[in-house]
Amino acid sequence: MKFDYREALKKIPVNPGVYQYWDEAGELIYIGKAKNLRNRVGSYFNKDNYRINSKTRVLVSKIANITFTIVDSEIDAWLLENSLIKKHQPRYNVLLKDDKTYPWIVIKNETFPRIYWTRNIIKDGSKYFGPYASISMMHTILGLIKEIYPLRTCNLPLSQSNIAAGKFKVCLEYQIGNCKGPCQAYQSEEDYNNNITNIYDILNGKTGQVVRSVKSQLDIASSELNFELAHKLKRQYDLLEKYQSKSTIVNSSISDVDVFSIASDEKLAFVNFLKVMNGSVIQTQTLELKKRLEETDEELLSIAITEFRTRFNSNSKEIIIPFELELEDPLLKFTVPKMGEKKKLLELSQKNVIFFRRDKMEQYEKLNPEVRTDRLLNLMMKDLRLNQLPRHIECFDNSNFQGNYPVSAIVVFKDARPSKKDYRHFNVKTVEGPNDFATMEEAVYRRYKRMLEEETPLPQLVIIDGGKGQLSAALKSLKLLGIDKQLTVIGIAKRLEELFFPGDQYPLYLDKKSETLKIIQQLRDEAHRFGITFHRLKRDKGTLVTELYDIPGIGKTTAEKLLVRFKSVVKIREASKEELLTVLNLKQTKSLLSYFDDGSSIDLSTSADDEKDLSN
Image 1 (cartoon, rainbow, N blue to C red):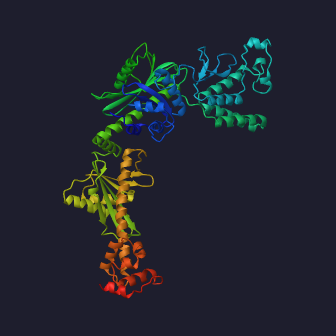
Image 2: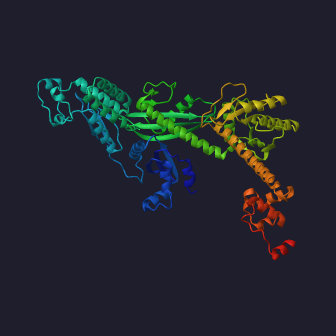
Image 3: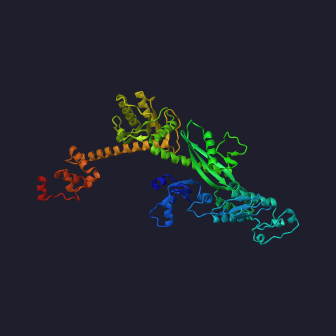
């Protein structure tokens, strides 16, 4: 079966992430990164892309399946791609055999710690930050730190005894202001370490506390009129404000852990697994579980953990999970992180499992539309506090023009889809002038009085386009008919999308992305469209016929003929004499043209041939 890349692209998101290409034998043949997954993958299949070389065409011809992992940023995609390529070494990827591809920033474990970049991680108690996919970003960060906090760059053994013995002298770095001279006790160890603490926070992305501290010092210096110090602090403050910390996906302190997250519904559950080794994600996969006996998330996650660890032969001693499990193993540590790097890893896993679940459900619902219908109806019943599924919904809307040509429209949705054969219009009979409440009251009464007389099943939900006033008017008619307890009626106000229920003082607000709200908005918009179309037709017809009645020689029958032939007053104005003569006689034509143009620019004379033709 030929691979359908168009269907595959529909499932791929526009998020940053890593994509994997697989061949027919299930072998991973290529791993790539992207800022926009859908656009990047789609570019491989673009026939107009002449930049694709022959080797890439061969790769594309072998693709039988595409999988992907979404991440938070393009930097994260670079890092994940790097670690996955090292792990799997796909045939069409450049092999990355060097484990030290990306650099790290290190705070050395020593007295008066140095800060520099390295590709070698030595487990000597030093703090490592990274890896940095962008070398320029790393140097920018180091430059910022150097400018804000002057630190030593020498490798002298600055012990307190050596400093006290006067073994060292300040160098050029001190003279030009890049170092405060701790080698000669010009800077205390306490002051130096305070700077290291701030740098540690900056490298961890926790700039807020550092910014607040500098701002506080700046305010004090300004109040004390210490302008030199205030200027220096102001520069630090501005640099910190502009600085955006690196995006982290991993941390060197996380050496060997398994990460799990779960998303489930009534029938299915999905569990995502991330394998982290030496500070890098080297494996990611999502598993689908079908429920049999209404298993809990705790039970399902326990099953998935065992399956994944067996499948990938994992011996990690620590497992990161989203909630506590009743599992006891003296050799394992279960962690439910609340903050920090482990929390970020859990959030990454959760983001992927949620997306995977949504994609699978969309595929399933396309093949089984009734599943989507039942899910939507159950969701609406829950969101709107109904006591039965709203399989039959009706929505009312009114239209008028300065009180003239008032009409009401009703649209019907059955099983969450429009049922256009059941749409209805109402010419308002009992209301004079612009009275929207009375118009709504009449339309609702006439609609359900007829349904009762014809013994037609009533809807479960009635939606009124309007606020409390329109809702009260509709409820008045339902009470008069004695059916106000047999169905639910709500009003929707356009401005803030407020939902009003009878008897409730405060409106209900649904999430703007709620599928329930989207269906209600679709009903409201469809009722407005259907009603306004009928209203405009009635208004145009009424306006045109009334105006034509004022023309001498044009009666009701003739006016209707003109309406059928030319459709609108604009087209009648623009019609030529010859076109008008296809409907009117010569006298009527002269009268109509004179009415519209005062006869000033129209040649109404006729030739003998014209008269002859007319007589025929």
